[in-house]
Every structure is written in C-alpha cells, then in structure tokens.
Amino acid sequence: MSIRTGIEQGILTIEFDRIDKKNAITAAMYQAMADALRAAETDRNVRAILLLGKPEIFTAGNDLEDFMQRPPTAGEGAEQAPVFQFLYQISHATKPIVAAVSGAAVGVGTTMLLHCDLVYASDTAKLSLPFVQLGLCPEAASSLLLPRLVGYQRAAEKLLLGEAFSAQEALEMGLVTRVLPVAELHDFALQQARKLAALPASSLRETKRLMKAGDVAAVEKQMADEGTVFRRMLVAPEAKEAFAAFFQKRRPDFMKFE
Ligand code: COA
Image (tube, rainbow, N blue to C red):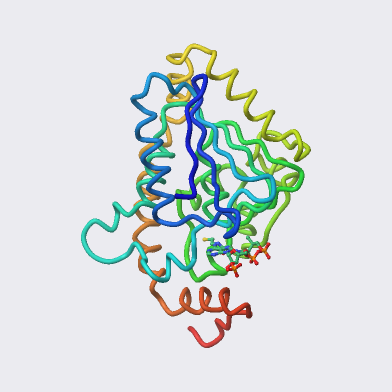
C-alpha cells in the first residue's frame, strides 16, 4: 500500500512508506490517505493528525508513471479521483494536522503543507513546486494560498520557475513553522502532536474553523478551477514530454510547443 497509518494516544499517524520510489504518491496511496482523513473526522480516538515522510525524503510528489498510465482526467467522476479526494479531505480537516518534512517535498508534497497547521521542516528539507516544469498547473489551491501567504512575487518565483528552495527560505516566507536538525524532527513533531491531543478538542476545532472560515469558499472555488485545468494539462503534449523526459533521464524540450 505504501502508506502506513496508525492511531496511538489520540494521534493518527499517516506515513509515506515507499522509499524505493522516493515516496512518490500513487492513486492507491492518495486513496488510503483520503480514507484515513475521512475516517478521522468521526473517530473520537483521533484528536490530532501527524503526517510523516522518511528522514531521507518527504515525498517526490505525484507518481509520474501513475499519472501517465492512469490520468485522473476522463469522463464522469474525474473530480472524485483519489488525488482530488485527498485534497478535499486535507483542506477540510477539522482536526489539527502536524507535518514533519525532511528531504525533498515535491509538488503536492509542498502544496499539502498549505493545509497543515503546524509544519516542521528539517534543515535538509527542499521544497519545490515544479508544476510548470512538468507542463501542468498548480493544485491544492496553492495558486491562491501561496501568493496570499508569501506575496505575489515570491510565489511567482516558486510557481513559475519551479526551482527547489530550502527549509530556511520556507521559514522566512511563513510556509513552515520551525526548522529543526533532521535527527530531532520526527520526535519534535510527535511531541507537538501529543500536546495538541491533550488539549480540549472542541477549542482546537473551533479555533481552526475560525482561522480558516473566511477562506473556505475561495479555496473550494480555486481547487475546482485548478482541477479543471490540471486534468486538461495532464494529457496535453507538454506534460507527456515532461514525463517522458523524466523517465528517459533527459532534459525536456518544450520549444516545439507554442
Ligand atoms: N514518480 C514516479 N517515480 C519516481 C518519482 C515520481 N514522482 N520520483 C522518483 N521516482 C523514482 C525514479 O524513477 C527512480 O526509480 P528507479 O529506481 O526505478 O529508476 C527512483 O524513484 C529514484 O529516483 P531518482 O530520481 O533516481 O532519485 P534522486 O534522489 O536522484 O532524486 C527527486 C529525487 C525527488 C529529486 C527526483 O526523483 C525527482 O525530481 N522526482 C520527480 C519529482 C516530480 O516531478 N514530481 C511530480 C510533482 S507534480
């Protein structure tokens, strides 16, 4: 399955566990995460959620082979593809989410952080949003939330060029909460999740809801707009060239496209 989940002492842990493929996320993995988040909403045993990768890597983002073979694009119900279910659940989660990011956090590995509450990154973390480099467009409402969070020009540099940036830069931009040595990251994130689990759940829920209430409709609309464009671009020649280039270990050639 490549996603490990477990509930202990009030904390639902969701962990990427596909290190041989750099924790790249397949449709089955999105489905497992969406299901775990959905179940957590009504599970009284879950008081906080902890999202983990491996010390070497958080996630290489969407599994590109999966995207090529089974793009969540065609026909009725495309909006219900596992990736979109996951984005819906994480963006509507009412319980607090703590993320621990170490190594690369590519694409959705970074955009999902915009929906987490406490984001801890190791000093080895490298975030990136290479949607344009892949012939795609942003998702997870990142085209709305990132400019709002960090300012248009800084968001434009990250989203248009798609180059990786450090945990320290992410901290300065306000995208992560704190940077820690990699050896301390997971323990620290767990301690913070334990603190949340011990607090009054109703107060946490209402506080999170109040902080986000003004954005809910705009985030939903942006995600729907992004989803429409994303599904179209996923099967367009530019994305096909980008994916093929990745697996052929060569540079993509976009100059042949208008
Ligand atoms: N989808 C599918 N497979 C992936 C993957 C992805 N997103 N990212 C890595 N892999 C696979 C590689 O194909 C390789 O498989 P192989 O051993 O069978 O050849 C394996 O994971 C190791 O990847 P590799 O690129 O050799 O590791 P690296 O340490 O040199 O680089 C990354 C790590 C994450 C920087 C690099 O793999 C990468 O850029 N991945 C693509 C990220 C991406 O574009 N994601 C989509 C965002 S929307």
